[in-house]
Every structure is written in structure tokens, then in C-alpha cells.
Image 1 (cartoon, rainbow, N blue to C red):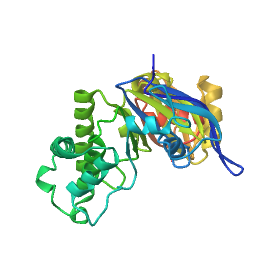
Image 2: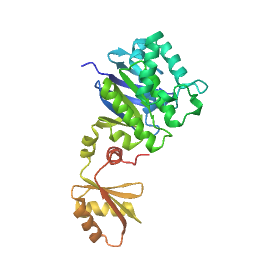
Image 3: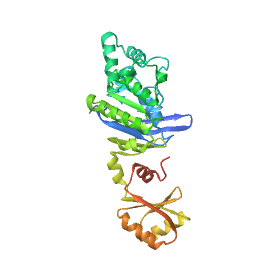
Length: 305
């Protein structure tokens, strides 16, 4: 198979700091993939290298078989890139922004006009085509940004934390637009995010932390890797309570951010046993099915920041 995106043993350093540490991954055509990680985890560096904006220190990246280092022009013809901050000229209209972008890709005449109209229609901006960009809300600017990259019908759409600064309603509209694009064109979508609910909607999630992929898989597969339900206990002496829970119940109890954390496949009954055994010591109890945040804690030993 020729992957939409193939990253092999990618390492990148900024001086002595390692931003990416031997990262390898592959993305099948037509899929929706999330690169999930806290700030400083390596997401933005990976994004910039895949988008041909930066060269890796070590390793390789291929987009539909083309090498981003030696065939960057061919790669760019297959890419649509949406940056964290809109790359729009504020003093031009929406249509003028799309016109200049299309010309950079060699579009002229009827094909350019048709491409602009179709892209604006797909994101619901036909009636805003002649409006100056600086007058648009954040959500409409994001739609204009997506319309701009859709003009060239990219095979791979890269989005760097695309919902930064958007309210929940606008975020929902954006995901609806992306789902429509993927369904109609078969576009491969790869986004970086630090928002757990966004990653949970993807087909496949790569969890990055401190420059490495700590785990990857479908969201449901990842949460099933966690050992049952997750119990979180608050107490005055978490380390002491964790050790006594482990000794008494042979259940692994850890301390994460001053909370005792236990994974158990029968949490509803185990909670009662804990409260009975350590009556008066437990201030509060929370338990539920594991989330992607629990996956992160399970594999890194610390809370997702």
C-alpha cells in the first residue's frame, strides 16, 4: 500500500533539546487521524516537517510515496495545510484571498472561478465572498481558510490545532464540514490537537509525549487497553493510602497529581470495599469508564496537561 503519510524514524533537535525522538507512523488513504499530545509533546514540529516547512534532523517523511525532502514540489501539490492561526490577508475579501491562492497553484480563468465558487459553497461562505476578512468572526475565518485549501482538492489535509480560539458551536460546524469533505472527496485528514474530545472522533489516534509516540490505535481500542474502570480517590495522604490498597487488595494503586488512581474491572463493587476498608480516610471517590486522558495516564504515569 502507498500510504497517504508515512513517517520513518523521524528525529529532530533544537540545539540539545530533542523535539522528536525516533517517530514512525503510517496513515492509510481516506482516514481521519489525530495526533494527540500536550503542549511541548512534538506535535507542531511533526506537523511542520510533514508540511515541508522544516527539514528533519534524521529520518524520512513520504506523502503518497513522494519524499518531502527531495520531492517537495510534488508533495505540496497533494497537500492542503491549515495553520493554527489563519493565513489570510485581512485587507482582502474572502474571494480575493482564494483567487491569489488558486493562482499560486496555477489555476486560471474558468477553472479558478469555478474552484472558488465550489469551495465557498462547500463551507457555506458564498454570501460572504465579497466581505473583507478582518470583518469576519473567528469561525468564519476558519471556514475561509478551509475553503482556500479545498480549491486545489488536496489528497491530504493537514490541520494544526484548527479549533484554537473557537467556541463549541463553531467547533461542531467545523467537524461537520470536515466530515462532509472526507465523505465526498475521500480526503485524508490529519490534525494535531490537545483536545481529548477531538481526538476521540478520529479513526486512529497517535498519542505523542516528549517527542515520542507512546501508544496508538482506534480510540475504542486505546480505552480498552486500560485495565477496566478507573477509580480516583482523594485523601490526605495519597502515597500511604495507595501502598495500603495495593497490599490489602493486590490491586495496583498509583498516585497521580495527589490523587490515588486504581484501574479495576468491577469498580462499582470495589469502591464499596475501599470505602469500607478505609472508612474516614477517603474524602471523595470518582469512577467511570476510561477516556483518552486515562489512556495517557496509563502509559505515561502523569496527567494530560
